[in-house]
Amino acid sequence: MELLKKIKDKATEYDSKFEEIILKFTVGQGGKAGTTGEEATFEQGKYFATKFEIFMYAVMLGLRNDYRLAFAPKAKKISFQYYMKHWTPVDLVDYIVMGTLSKSDIDFNALENKNEKEVDEEILKLRKLIEEYANGGFDKIRAKLESEPNFFDNNDNCFIDLLDEKTK
Image 1: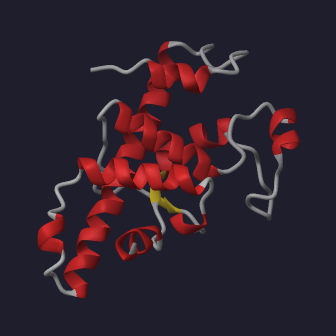
Image 2 (image 1 turned 90 degrees about the horizontal axis):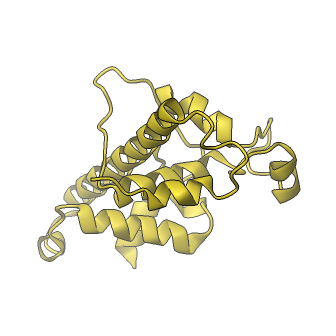
């Protein structure tokens, strides 16, 4: 699917205000991002081995709660070094893209008749939507940390439990 390939051939960004939360739950990688295995993740008491893993989780949490946050006008954005096409597991990346596509206002019939530049503009809108859902998910994690500081301590299922706490 050419559209899916084009969507995944983009780097996403997140708001730097969530960096502390991301680092709290993600293994420190040093100079080699993504090289830490499950054993080191467990030893460090972290839930995610890479930043893109918690980003994917945040997108799912945002989608689950239909909660998205746009970047503030002067927000400092941090970009991933790896495009979505390099993220794993691939099925989860596809699920996130498809879930976000279902929330978008892209007219797929009209998309067929658009030129390359117009298609790229639609893809950028979709990337922005993915980022907004991630920001919403990160904001949910932040709110949970503030309201229940011990929620994530000694609870191996805390991130599953948070997904189950769908709010309106």
